[in-house]
Length: 210
Image (tube, rainbow, N blue to C red):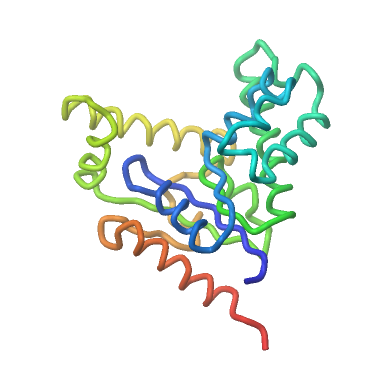
């Protein structure tokens, strides 16, 4: 398979992260999720190289790329006391990491506005995984021990935070289908079905040469 980067955004409870991990495993490539990006954005942990030993990161290129990017940014950039400036600095730092990963390897990147950051690359596809609220609540209830009303509020608030984050740094609407090449309803396809649909789309989008 030629080098390809899949960016994947997802509604909370849709199973999008599982889709990303399943897809990466089946393609034999790395999956970089939001938690991994948060780890390499921890200034103290990057400063003393603790992130390099994290089980989720040590067998990937992420730490080396993050360390290179970290060394290129001003020493106090990720220690900024003004929260708005800190968040903007962190977005730029993570964006640089995402661009470098996309240059170096095939991978799946979850969240972090990756579809926007890599929008000009011809070797990248963007996917959005969604599902009806009742489906997402059923899945979320197995993770979060909350009463039904509180659980729904939590799911909606999580999506709202993601939408606000996306709008803050891209000016776009996170839910707008025109931001993605492929939009999949996980309640119809399931986790494995969504992964299979993405693989089928890859074959159409990047047909084998010859």
